[in-house]
Length: 294
Ligand SMILES: [Zn+2]
Image (cartoon, rainbow, N blue to C red; front, side, top):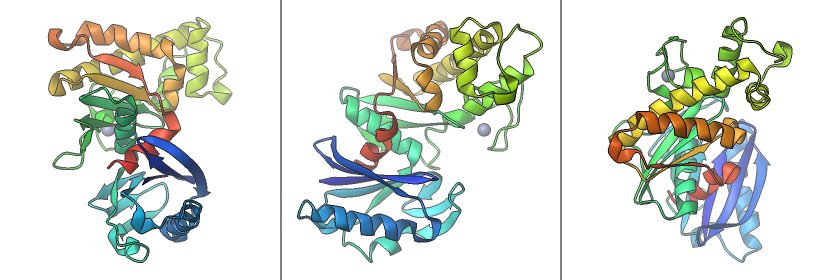
């Protein structure tokens, strides 16, 4: 049995996994001061139902929303935890050594493991920001600077909007939920629209596109082009088999994927034109599954 823990800003998702399937999952609240003690104590209780202890586990993995290097948490900005050595905490509870990575990497590995038939894949998550991960032979590739998969910071956009990373014009500045809202606001006088700008969300912009709203269609086409271009760059760099698109914005479904595929085909190097682009299948469970297989 393996354990995958996906730590989020408000809740922690904990999964018990056997043969690549989540056999039990539950959530606890994210409380900054007692976070890891809460996780381990809840696990000890849950494992009693299976007559197991933490030491019986094949692996315990953590997906964390921020920067983590060799189980050392550099910064989890949404939770307010900095400079914390997980190895130190774990020793109180188990002899097992744990593994950890950032949450987008874990989701990338989870989608790859769940799909099972890809020897190399890229996962891109479109949420408040844009993240991702690269998996080769079912193993996560983190890179020399633990930056592999940071596809949101490929600098491709002509508007040069400022990005959270300090650069300007990153993919994230247009293709994230935040970017979609920004584009709709910036172009609202150039296209006819029924979008309510008092309560605007990325979902509202995409729903408008679905209803043939001119501004909605413009924004959807704009981000599809940006994503198709960024993915064509990734594809020719790593020559991957499959690209998974996940995150809240991917709930747009086929209207988004079809647009990305159209531009991807146009821009991709000839040998990479048939790279599969799929909607992520696991959605909120991907992080737990991936963490368990780190
Ligand atoms: Zn950036």
